[in-house]
Amino acid sequence: NLSYNKLAEIDPSAFAELSNLQEVRLDNNELTAIPSLGPAAASVLALHLHHNRIRSIEGSQLQPYVTLETLDLSSNDITEIRNGCFPQGLHIKELYLGSNRISTLEPGAFDSLSRSLLTLRLSKNRITQLPVKAFRLPRLIQLELNRNRLRLIEGLTFQGLDSLEVLKLQRNNISKLTDGAFWGLAKMQVLHLEYNSLTEVNSGSLYGLSSLHQLHLSNNSISRINPDGWSFCQKLHELILSYNNLTRLDEGSLADLGGLHVLRLSHNSIHHIAEGAFRGLKNLRVLELDHNDISGTIEDTNGAFTGLENLSKLTLFGNKIKSVAKKAFSGLEALEHLNLGDNAIRSIQADAFARMRSLRQLLINSDSFLCDCQLKWLPQWLVEKELQSFVVATCAHPESLKSKSIFAIQPESFVCDDFPKPQIIIQPETTVAVLGKDIRFTCLAASSSSSPMMFAWKKDNEMLHNAEIENFAHVRAKDGEVMECTTILHLRHVTFAHEGRYQCVITNHFGSTYSNKARLTVNVLPSFIKTPHDITSRTGTTARLECAAEGHPAPQIAWQKDGGTDFPAARERRMHVMPDDDVFFITDVKIEDMGVYSCTAQNSAGSVLANATLTVL
Image (tube, rainbow, N blue to C red; front, side, top):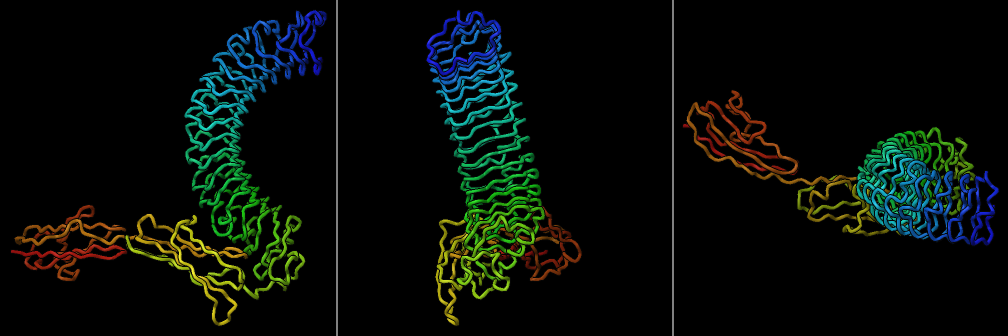
């Protein structure tokens, strides 16, 4: 061990008597080249030269180290790796080249180490581009390229790394992974891509990663998850997407990850979790959603966590949750740990946690509780389940209980003398509208608090940001202490794009109240595309009348004669309507078939009628 000296050069004769020398530590000196150790070099297994001033790797300098297995050249001044740097005959297994100034990797530079090299560290250099098939190292297990200046990973870049299990690419500036970027890495288990500039993940870029267990994608700019993005990662156990720009989890977006055990999604901007977003994740054990904005999911939505029947840990720390709905955690019967910390929770509906029979840890920390009759159940339930030690819950209302722990209040003190949280009195109603018409949805809410109420509308569980909304408030006359507020959502000239489920959300200091979801269906009045014409037929022939209409929903066609449905051709089964045709036949025409035939096209929006006269000769 000659480390931490000021050696600028080595006299080979100093090692002449060390014929069994296996490890040499010359790190933290002032060497400018790989030293010669004379005949002693032939037995050296490990050579530590990090933290020197070595500027290049010369093949002739390494040639004597015929048994060398570990070479550490990190933290030097090396600028390039070219063919000839590593001569034939070396058996290096571990090569450390991190923290240099390497900007050039010549294709084939490591080929001479193809039979031995297991670990290659090139982190913290200045590499901007990787040549395609830059590494023909079929035995390599770990490759580190983190903290370089890579921007793009081309297809087939890593072909030739048949045994690679760990690839580190974090802290580059990678913004794009082309299709086949990791092709050839069928044995890779861990891929680090955190701290880059990726905006999406698609299936083409992950093609060939059939053995991948861990995928680290945190601290990127990923804003959406492609549903087909994971189709080639069927064995993935851990997916880390924290610190990205995700705003929503759509239905089925993770359905291909049936083997996933851990999913980390904290520190995004997720505000919408569709019902069925986690469908297919039956093996998931840990789900982290800390520091997002999914208050609406917990306060109102049912079924957001459907499909997670084996989940044991769910973290929702710091999500601006003010209330917990009764069915917010439906489907989480196996849950053992639930973290609701750093949320200013005001209310929790009765039995919100009742189906979690395995719950062993429930973390709540809130001094904002509305301690009325609807919260009476909570302290009793927490004590009964021995969960009270994880819960810090104090009252903010009513004034008489302010700052008191819910565990220090007698059950009879939880009373409902007022209703400071808004209550919805008039719900929006399901509506059927004709295309192009104006419609409106109305909500009326009341509160005994003077806290101002704010209004919002949702469509299909997503907030409407540029909607035409009319709000007004008044004091209820009969008692003077209740504020009533009305919000009206106007939809002008409705189209099919307006169809969906609408819901009002009314919020004040004490929490948010969510209305029922009213469905809007847009219909189109029937209109004829074929109308029957007056015809003349002879007795014994076949009369033919045409009638077809369009509309939404598709209109039903019906026929009448002279205003009634009981007519000779119908009774005698001489009337035929082809199911997939627009033609109405009367066979073996008779005199009594003569009259006015009416075609009616009807759907839920209305009906239209067209007449034609049949004359029989």
